[in-house]
Image 1: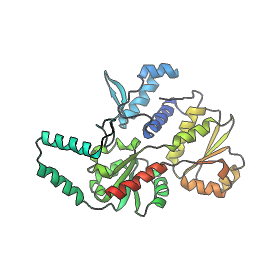
Image 2: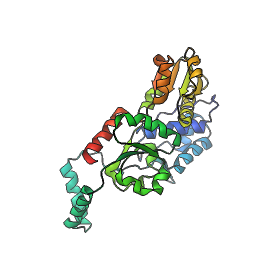
Image 3: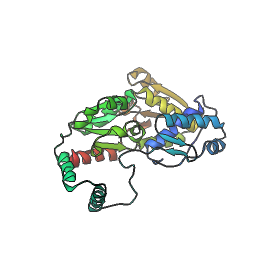
Image 4: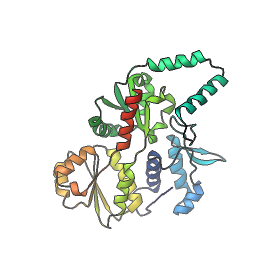
Amino acid sequence: MKISISKDSSIPIRDQLIEQLGLQIAAGTLKPHQKLPSIRALADRLGVHYSTITAAYNHMADVGLLEVRQGSGVRVAASGPLKDATEVDLTLKQMCDSFLAQAAERGFSCEEVLLQAETLRQRKPVKRLLCIDANKDFHQVIKNELAPHFSLPVDSITPQEFKANPDLQKDSLLVTSLYHLYAFQDHVVDLTRLIACNIEPGRSDMEAVENLQKGALIVLVSVSPTMMHMAQNLIAALRGEEVAVRSIEPSDTTEIKYIVRHADLFITDKQGAAIVKDCGGEGKMRTFQLYSQSTIDKIKERLAKWG
Protein backbone atom coordinates (compact mmCIF):
# COMPACT_ATOMS: atom_id res chain seq x y z
CA MET A 1 0.00 0.00 0.00
CA LYS A 2 1.59 3.23 -1.19
CA ILE A 3 0.63 6.29 0.86
CA SER A 4 2.16 9.78 0.70
CA ILE A 5 1.26 12.74 2.86
CA SER A 6 2.37 16.34 3.09
CA LYS A 7 2.32 17.87 6.55
CA ASP A 8 2.90 21.31 5.04
CA SER A 9 -0.26 21.25 2.94
CA SER A 10 -3.39 23.19 3.86
CA ILE A 11 -5.37 20.00 3.09
CA PRO A 12 -5.94 18.00 6.32
CA ILE A 13 -3.90 14.79 6.51
CA ARG A 14 -7.12 12.86 7.20
CA ASP A 15 -8.53 13.98 3.83
CA GLN A 16 -5.26 13.20 2.05
CA LEU A 17 -5.44 9.65 3.41
CA ILE A 18 -9.12 9.17 2.54
CA GLU A 19 -8.64 10.21 -1.10
CA GLN A 20 -5.58 7.99 -1.59
CA LEU A 21 -7.12 4.92 0.05
CA GLY A 22 -10.36 5.48 -1.84
CA LEU A 23 -8.56 5.74 -5.18
CA GLN A 24 -6.57 2.57 -4.50
CA ILE A 25 -9.76 0.68 -3.64
CA ALA A 26 -11.50 2.03 -6.75
CA ALA A 27 -8.49 1.11 -8.88
CA GLY A 28 -8.41 -2.43 -7.48
CA THR A 29 -4.92 -1.91 -6.06
CA LEU A 30 -6.34 -2.70 -2.64
CA LYS A 31 -8.32 -5.93 -2.93
CA PRO A 32 -11.45 -7.03 -1.03
CA HIS A 33 -10.51 -8.58 2.34
CA GLN A 34 -6.94 -7.21 2.10
CA LYS A 35 -5.58 -6.32 5.52
CA LEU A 36 -4.36 -2.76 6.02
CA PRO A 37 -1.72 -1.57 8.49
CA SER A 38 -2.98 -1.13 12.03
CA ILE A 39 -3.80 2.37 13.21
CA ARG A 40 -0.63 2.68 15.26
CA ALA A 41 1.56 1.05 12.61
CA LEU A 42 0.40 3.48 9.92
CA ALA A 43 0.65 6.41 12.30
CA ASP A 44 4.27 5.48 13.11
CA ARG A 45 5.08 4.96 9.44
CA LEU A 46 3.72 8.38 8.43
CA GLY A 47 4.82 10.19 11.57
CA VAL A 48 1.34 11.44 12.48
CA HIS A 49 -0.91 11.11 15.54
CA TYR A 50 -2.88 7.86 15.70
CA SER A 51 -6.15 9.81 16.01
CA THR A 52 -5.66 11.06 12.44
CA ILE A 53 -5.46 7.49 11.13
CA THR A 54 -8.42 6.53 13.32
CA ALA A 55 -10.51 9.34 11.82
CA ALA A 56 -9.64 8.32 8.24
CA TYR A 57 -10.30 4.61 8.85
CA ASN A 58 -13.57 5.31 10.67
CA HIS A 59 -14.81 7.55 7.86
CA MET A 60 -14.11 4.85 5.28
CA ALA A 61 -15.74 2.23 7.49
CA ASP A 62 -18.84 4.44 7.79
CA VAL A 63 -19.23 4.55 4.00
CA GLY A 64 -18.69 0.79 3.73
CA LEU A 65 -15.22 0.71 2.18
CA LEU A 66 -13.37 -0.74 5.17
CA GLU A 67 -14.20 -3.23 7.89
CA VAL A 68 -12.80 -2.42 11.32
CA ARG A 69 -13.15 -5.37 13.69
CA GLN A 70 -11.78 -5.86 17.15
CA GLY A 71 -9.13 -8.56 17.08
CA SER A 72 -8.92 -8.90 13.28
CA GLY A 73 -7.72 -5.43 12.37
CA VAL A 74 -8.70 -3.27 9.42
CA ARG A 75 -9.55 -4.81 6.07
CA VAL A 76 -10.96 -3.70 2.74
CA ALA A 77 -14.64 -4.63 2.68
CA ALA A 78 -15.88 -7.53 0.59
CA SER A 79 -17.43 -6.38 -2.65
CA GLY A 80 -19.20 -7.40 -5.77
CA PRO A 81 -20.51 -10.54 -7.38
CA LEU A 82 -17.25 -12.37 -6.74
CA LYS A 83 -17.31 -12.10 -2.95
CA ASP A 84 -16.76 -15.81 -2.46
CA ALA A 85 -14.80 -16.56 -5.62
CA THR A 86 -11.45 -18.28 -5.54
CA GLU A 87 -8.43 -17.33 -7.60
CA VAL A 88 -8.59 -20.64 -9.51
CA ASP A 89 -9.54 -20.37 -13.20
CA LEU A 90 -12.39 -22.80 -13.88
CA THR A 91 -13.98 -23.88 -17.14
CA LEU A 92 -17.68 -23.26 -17.68
CA LYS A 93 -18.38 -26.97 -17.21
CA GLN A 94 -16.45 -27.02 -13.92
CA MET A 95 -18.39 -24.00 -12.64
CA CYS A 96 -21.70 -25.57 -13.66
CA ASP A 97 -20.76 -28.91 -12.08
CA SER A 98 -19.89 -27.13 -8.84
CA PHE A 99 -23.13 -25.12 -8.87
CA LEU A 100 -25.29 -28.19 -9.59
CA ALA A 101 -23.58 -30.16 -6.85
CA GLN A 102 -24.24 -27.37 -4.34
CA ALA A 103 -27.87 -27.08 -5.48
CA ALA A 104 -28.39 -30.82 -5.08
CA GLU A 105 -26.64 -30.85 -1.70
CA ARG A 106 -29.00 -28.13 -0.46
CA GLY A 107 -32.09 -30.02 -1.54
CA PHE A 108 -33.05 -28.25 -4.78
CA SER A 109 -34.45 -30.36 -7.61
CA CYS A 110 -33.38 -30.50 -11.26
CA GLU A 111 -36.76 -28.99 -12.21
CA GLU A 112 -36.15 -25.99 -9.91
CA VAL A 113 -32.74 -25.37 -11.46
CA LEU A 114 -34.20 -25.55 -14.98
CA LEU A 115 -36.97 -23.13 -13.96
CA GLN A 116 -34.34 -20.61 -12.86
CA ALA A 117 -32.54 -21.00 -16.18
CA GLU A 118 -35.81 -20.42 -18.05
CA THR A 119 -36.45 -17.29 -15.99
CA LEU A 120 -33.07 -16.01 -17.16
CA ARG A 121 -34.05 -16.59 -20.79
CA GLN A 122 -37.33 -14.71 -20.40
CA ARG A 123 -36.04 -11.54 -18.75
CA LYS A 124 -36.42 -8.17 -20.42
CA PRO A 125 -33.64 -7.05 -22.79
CA VAL A 126 -31.29 -4.30 -21.65
CA LYS A 127 -32.62 -0.92 -22.75
CA ARG A 128 -30.06 1.39 -21.12
CA LEU A 129 -26.85 1.69 -19.19
CA LEU A 130 -27.57 2.74 -15.63
CA CYS A 131 -24.46 4.19 -14.01
CA ILE A 132 -24.44 4.38 -10.22
CA ASP A 133 -22.27 6.99 -8.54
CA ALA A 134 -22.79 8.74 -5.22
CA ASN A 135 -21.44 12.05 -6.53
CA LYS A 136 -24.24 13.70 -8.50
CA ASP A 137 -21.86 16.12 -10.16
CA PHE A 138 -20.01 13.10 -11.62
CA HIS A 139 -23.13 12.08 -13.53
CA GLN A 140 -22.55 14.46 -16.42
CA VAL A 141 -18.89 13.39 -16.56
CA ILE A 142 -20.02 9.76 -16.84
CA LYS A 143 -22.52 10.49 -19.61
CA ASN A 144 -19.94 12.50 -21.56
CA GLU A 145 -17.52 9.56 -21.42
CA LEU A 146 -19.86 6.64 -22.16
CA ALA A 147 -22.53 8.02 -24.49
CA PRO A 148 -20.30 8.20 -27.60
CA HIS A 149 -19.53 4.46 -27.32
CA PHE A 150 -23.09 3.08 -27.09
CA SER A 151 -26.38 3.33 -28.96
CA LEU A 152 -28.29 2.71 -25.73
CA PRO A 153 -29.21 5.66 -23.49
CA VAL A 154 -26.86 6.35 -20.57
CA ASP A 155 -28.50 7.36 -17.28
CA SER A 156 -26.92 8.03 -13.89
CA ILE A 157 -28.32 7.75 -10.36
CA THR A 158 -26.99 7.60 -6.81
CA PRO A 159 -26.87 4.39 -4.74
CA GLN A 160 -29.67 5.78 -2.56
CA GLU A 161 -31.87 6.37 -5.60
CA PHE A 162 -31.11 2.88 -6.86
CA LYS A 163 -32.08 1.25 -3.57
CA ALA A 164 -35.29 3.28 -3.47
CA ASN A 165 -36.25 2.18 -7.00
CA PRO A 166 -35.28 -1.50 -7.38
CA ASP A 167 -37.41 -1.94 -10.53
CA LEU A 168 -34.90 0.21 -12.44
CA GLN A 169 -32.59 -2.78 -12.77
CA LYS A 170 -35.09 -4.93 -14.68
CA ASP A 171 -34.13 -3.50 -18.07
CA SER A 172 -30.71 -1.98 -17.25
CA LEU A 173 -27.07 -2.94 -17.29
CA LEU A 174 -25.67 -1.51 -14.06
CA VAL A 175 -22.25 0.14 -14.26
CA THR A 176 -20.37 1.36 -11.21
CA SER A 177 -16.91 1.68 -9.71
CA LEU A 178 -15.65 -0.57 -6.93
CA TYR A 179 -15.66 2.51 -4.69
CA HIS A 180 -19.47 2.82 -4.86
CA LEU A 181 -20.40 -0.85 -5.14
CA TYR A 182 -20.22 -1.39 -1.38
CA ALA A 183 -23.20 0.91 -0.83
CA PHE A 184 -25.76 -1.07 -2.86
CA GLN A 185 -24.34 -4.46 -3.84
CA ASP A 186 -26.79 -6.41 -1.67
CA HIS A 187 -29.71 -4.87 -3.62
CA VAL A 188 -28.60 -6.16 -7.02
CA VAL A 189 -30.96 -8.93 -8.16
CA ASP A 190 -29.22 -10.10 -11.35
CA LEU A 191 -25.43 -10.07 -11.06
CA THR A 192 -24.98 -10.83 -14.77
CA ARG A 193 -26.20 -7.29 -15.36
CA LEU A 194 -23.64 -5.62 -13.15
CA ILE A 195 -20.27 -4.26 -14.26
CA ALA A 196 -18.03 -3.22 -11.35
CA CYS A 197 -14.94 -1.58 -12.78
CA ASN A 198 -11.59 -0.25 -11.66
CA ILE A 199 -10.77 3.43 -11.93
CA GLU A 200 -7.42 3.07 -13.68
CA PRO A 201 -6.30 6.34 -15.30
CA GLY A 202 -5.99 8.33 -12.06
CA ARG A 203 -2.72 6.60 -11.23
CA SER A 204 -0.95 7.77 -14.39
CA ASP A 205 -2.29 11.29 -13.90
CA MET A 206 -0.77 11.40 -10.43
CA GLU A 207 2.55 10.16 -11.82
CA ALA A 208 2.55 13.18 -14.12
CA VAL A 209 2.01 15.39 -11.06
CA GLU A 210 4.93 13.73 -9.26
CA ASN A 211 7.26 14.47 -12.18
CA LEU A 212 6.57 18.23 -12.27
CA GLN A 213 9.27 20.60 -11.13
CA LYS A 214 8.83 22.67 -7.97
CA GLY A 215 6.82 25.83 -8.52
CA ALA A 216 4.79 24.30 -11.36
CA LEU A 217 1.17 25.34 -11.93
CA ILE A 218 -1.50 22.62 -12.27
CA VAL A 219 -4.90 23.64 -13.61
CA LEU A 220 -7.98 21.47 -13.01
CA VAL A 221 -10.84 21.88 -15.49
CA SER A 222 -14.03 19.90 -14.89
CA VAL A 223 -17.81 20.17 -14.72
CA SER A 224 -17.51 18.30 -11.41
CA PRO A 225 -16.51 20.25 -8.29
CA THR A 226 -16.11 16.89 -6.52
CA MET A 227 -13.55 15.71 -9.04
CA MET A 228 -11.56 18.93 -8.66
CA HIS A 229 -11.72 18.68 -4.85
CA MET A 230 -10.50 15.07 -4.91
CA ALA A 231 -7.69 15.97 -7.30
CA GLN A 232 -6.61 18.84 -5.04
CA ASN A 233 -6.42 16.49 -2.05
CA LEU A 234 -4.38 13.91 -3.98
CA ILE A 235 -2.00 16.54 -5.34
CA ALA A 236 -1.55 17.99 -1.86
CA ALA A 237 -0.65 14.55 -0.52
CA LEU A 238 1.95 14.06 -3.26
CA ARG A 239 3.49 17.51 -3.51
CA GLY A 240 2.24 19.64 -0.62
CA GLU A 241 2.93 23.31 -1.32
CA GLU A 242 5.63 22.55 -3.92
CA VAL A 243 3.18 23.11 -6.77
CA ALA A 244 0.29 25.54 -7.23
CA VAL A 245 -3.20 24.26 -8.09
CA ARG A 246 -5.98 26.23 -9.76
CA SER A 247 -9.53 24.98 -10.44
CA ILE A 248 -11.55 26.42 -13.33
CA GLU A 249 -14.99 25.51 -14.66
CA PRO A 250 -15.13 24.66 -18.39
CA SER A 251 -17.54 27.53 -19.01
CA ASP A 252 -14.88 30.09 -18.03
CA THR A 253 -13.10 30.07 -21.40
CA THR A 254 -11.69 33.56 -20.88
CA GLU A 255 -9.74 32.41 -17.81
CA ILE A 256 -8.64 29.19 -19.54
CA LYS A 257 -7.30 31.10 -22.54
CA TYR A 258 -5.36 33.40 -20.22
CA ILE A 259 -3.88 30.68 -18.03
CA VAL A 260 -2.77 28.42 -20.92
CA ARG A 261 0.47 30.37 -21.26
CA HIS A 262 1.29 29.96 -17.54
CA ALA A 263 0.10 26.40 -16.78
CA ASP A 264 2.50 23.45 -16.71
CA LEU A 265 -0.20 20.77 -16.60
CA PHE A 266 -3.94 20.63 -17.21
CA ILE A 267 -5.96 17.77 -15.69
CA THR A 268 -9.43 17.73 -17.23
CA ASP A 269 -12.53 15.62 -17.73
CA LYS A 270 -13.73 14.83 -21.28
CA GLN A 271 -15.79 18.00 -21.61
CA GLY A 272 -13.01 20.16 -20.21
CA ALA A 273 -10.49 18.54 -22.57
CA ALA A 274 -12.31 19.78 -25.66
CA ILE A 275 -12.34 23.32 -24.30
CA VAL A 276 -8.69 23.31 -23.19
CA LYS A 277 -7.73 22.00 -26.64
CA ASP A 278 -9.65 24.83 -28.34
CA CYS A 279 -7.85 27.29 -26.08
CA GLY A 280 -4.43 26.02 -27.14
CA GLY A 281 -3.55 23.86 -24.14
CA GLU A 282 -3.60 20.42 -25.76
CA GLY A 283 0.13 19.82 -25.37
CA LYS A 284 -0.05 20.33 -21.59
CA MET A 285 -3.20 18.29 -21.00
CA ARG A 286 -4.07 14.97 -19.39
CA THR A 287 -7.68 13.83 -19.63
CA PHE A 288 -8.93 12.01 -16.54
CA GLN A 289 -11.45 9.31 -17.45
CA LEU A 290 -13.52 7.37 -14.94
CA TYR A 291 -13.91 4.48 -17.38
CA SER A 292 -10.93 3.02 -19.25
CA GLN A 293 -11.12 1.47 -22.72
CA SER A 294 -10.91 -1.99 -21.15
CA THR A 295 -14.05 -1.20 -19.12
CA ILE A 296 -15.88 0.05 -22.22
CA ASP A 297 -14.92 -3.16 -24.03
CA LYS A 298 -16.13 -5.21 -21.06
CA ILE A 299 -19.52 -3.43 -21.12
CA LYS A 300 -19.87 -4.11 -24.86
CA GLU A 301 -19.03 -7.78 -24.37
CA ARG A 302 -21.54 -8.14 -21.52
CA LEU A 303 -24.27 -6.52 -23.63
CA ALA A 304 -23.51 -8.82 -26.55
CA LYS A 305 -23.46 -12.02 -24.51
CA TRP A 306 -25.97 -11.31 -21.72
CA GLY A 307 -28.05 -8.32 -22.84
